[in-house]
Length: 321
Image (tube, rainbow, N blue to C red; front, side):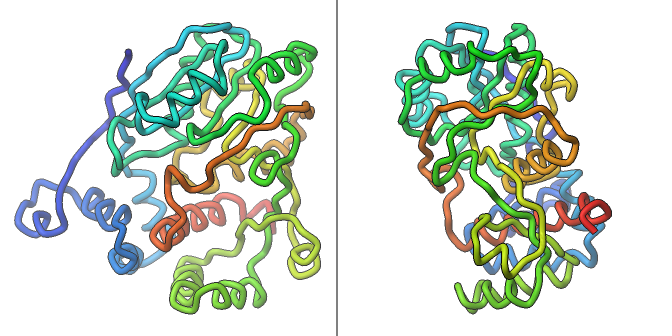
């Protein structure tokens, strides 16, 4: 087992911050941001005066721990799996069933929950480790998956391909993987849609978006959305991506932008893949995903996801406009 030491790893309760000046404002704000109490998360957003101030906090936010565990297997295809618990049921299912026979690199955050966990950071740590073995293909996968097709099917499909000819491989579209999403320009219908789903939450989502100038969001590509919203349609791996090692090397293993915090990092990568005209291909392989089992699907997660929407607009507005 190897360990990547985080830059900084501070703990404090909100109450203790008032008494102890040695805890930084960055960590105090992170305490609010990672709270399960929506009112605390709203307090987090209310503490920033501008978009630039919020993004600066995101850039300064420490990386969580990243403990590397490797499971031996064939190294032409290496699977990178960020996980909260290497010995947990999801990681165990990955190594004993879903990806059995392939070399696996688990990047463990080591705590449940880790207040500084960032899936983009831990995925990049695993990608860099995978490149040390000179594989042909690197698969990045969430840990909370379930088996549809076997690893043998994945291997047989990739063996057919010349890894020098392709950058990114998509799989058969399922409800959650290799699906068509759309970057949309937020308009009246999107604001109304947020209020229709939940007036309490929708009002706060719209308020935060207005305050920080969020102009773009991600929706599923479906007929009604194509009618109501202008935007760009792209294929999103959503938790399961396949990349040639050559492509990963061109990015020095940093495929995902680590400023995003557990949201939109794959949409960001997918949009870049589309607009830079990367060489893509599709194979017949299916895998399932227990959506929300790692990060949850509650109000607190939805509010936290808005920080990444702010950064996404900041990063892409000059191009999308």
